[in-house]
Image (cartoon, rainbow, N blue to C red; front, side, top):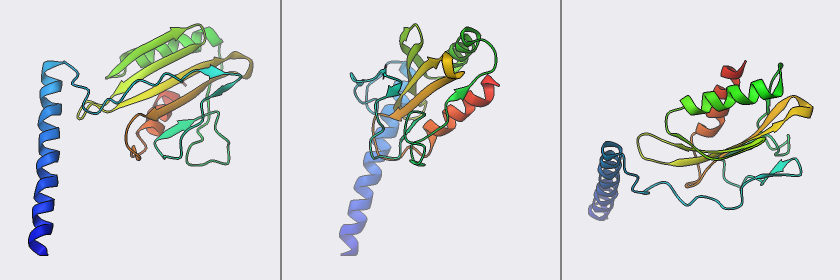
Length: 164
């Protein structure tokens, strides 16, 4: 029994090593291989003051989730000056974020892909200007996997601290 367990572990280790080598090649060539990028969602957007709900998985945060949903809820990005100035500052911060690619930039709405450097995992970030409430609504979610080790929450909190 121990022999089969060791073989299984060796096989899993080999798969992880192959994935790491492919990710390294991708990062050196600058050509996305799509290994961990997933498919771009077609159902994103900000409609009627809401983003689409987060799935059950703990790899998504949203300021339009129910406040009692501690796994998914995150406060919107509040701002004190003009809405246009804060929106511009957010866009500048995102442009400086390594691995970020703006997918959609329409008045009051921004969809950004955030790609991790090591393995090429892609998260979808959405931002909606809510000038009436003095906030920028936000949703950030991993495309693949179940857990994201709080990467999306930490990214939003980092943007929050930089906007102040």
